[in-house]
Image (cartoon, rainbow, N blue to C red; front, side, top):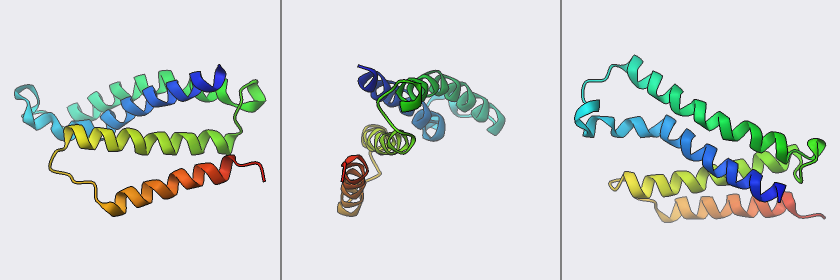
Length: 123
């Protein structure tokens, strides 16, 4: 159960972080965002990052093996990276229609999934 909670929280936190890092690139398409200063954009992104941390910290705290969770530190980081790319690919596909994900992106993502397998495999 802790593993599922950890992964779910990491998905939520990565969604907030992806919007904090890249969502502002769409602000100019909305009337309210056309004249935002860089400082305003930074503050909005910090606000989103706050919510990212509300999920990321408990995910890692509860998921870490030394705190009674199921994952080692390396496993937590690997899960987080795979989730980050998954969320980013969904985000890009849905919000940035002019960005095309090519075969090389998919192969690279596949290699990261392979890395997850290698890291989690008990040799």
